[in-house]
Image (cartoon, rainbow, N blue to C red; front, side, top):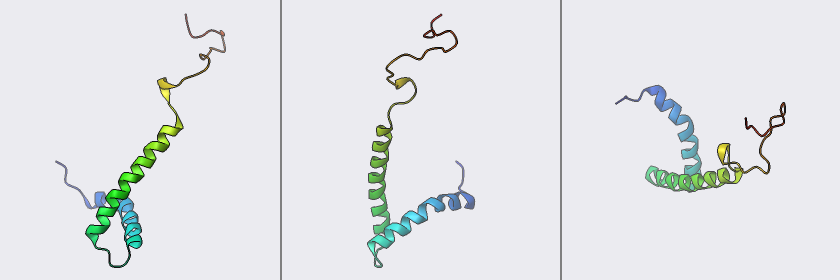
Length: 82
């Protein structure tokens, strides 16, 4: 098992602390760290749900695409069949 280094903590802190500070500010001055972390977890679940919904709206990629006409080879004007 790899031990975490100070650099690992610093990298994680770059994304963690702005979120923590945002939630702490929203909860107010008397918020306890336990409350802030609990709200962060709840907001993270909602944010993940929104992110997944947005990704679904982007449409299928790769082999899952539905195209109206098959792609043609512009050189031979064939449908890729030999």
